Image (cartoon, rainbow, N blue to C red; front, side, top):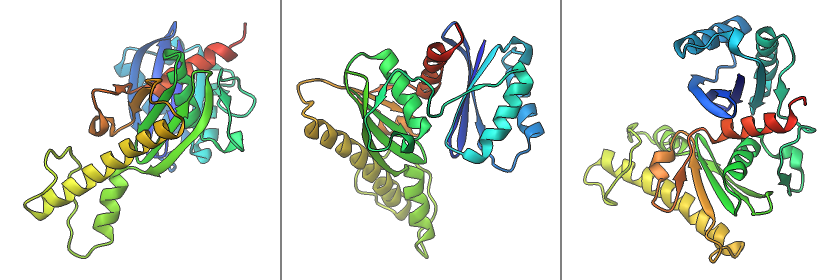
Amino acid sequence: MLLAIDIENKITNVGIFKNRNLVANFLITTDRNKSIDEIYLILKLMLMDKDIKFSDIDHVIISTVVPELLESYSKISKKIINKNPIIISPGVKTGINIKCENPKEVGTDRIIRAVGASDIYDKNIIIISASTITTIDYINDKKEFLGGVILPGIDLFEKSLHQESAKLPQVEILRSKKILGNNTTKSIQSGIFHAYQNACWGLVKDIIDERRLNDENPEIIITGKYRNLLAKSTSTQIPSLGLIGLSKIFEINKEK
């Protein structure tokens, strides 16, 4: 079995693959202050809850955008499988061509999602990752990563509004059906939701127009914690897109 670990700023997504099939998946909080022993125990308990033991794991692959956690997870991985894990870094084959000014600047989270999407669809793809940091990336039908957009997530919209005002309360983030709210809470919820949705879908439209994709019918994939807030009939939700990408990268780089 393959243990795939996708470490993002707030959430770490963990998946177990058997012959490229995702057989177990769970989320844990990304905590820079946890010790190696603590993380090891959390992983062990979460896997046990899925009826999986460390002894069932043969390989580990890791992607992280939190550099200070890389050493901890690498040591844990070596403890589990008694060999070094595959770490997404320059030199690891991905199957896509990163056509950016400096490919090393592109976050591994964006890369693995692009790999996962390109593994599923053989066409032009736009990926919206709706998390605390929202990214919107474009991969063409030649499997070339041509860049994207980075903007605050919807929770940062809500947080900044509350923190920068004296009287506005914190509110639950939810899908608002009406534009006009008839009280302060509903007005904030509407403003946050519609601003975020219009920003993301407006940027998608701008990408389609700029790249002249109107006749190409690009696949629009939404992933991430807040994907349900952006879902439309013209899009596809794939919760574990990054893990799918890690599984594909492992297949490309595994020892023959």
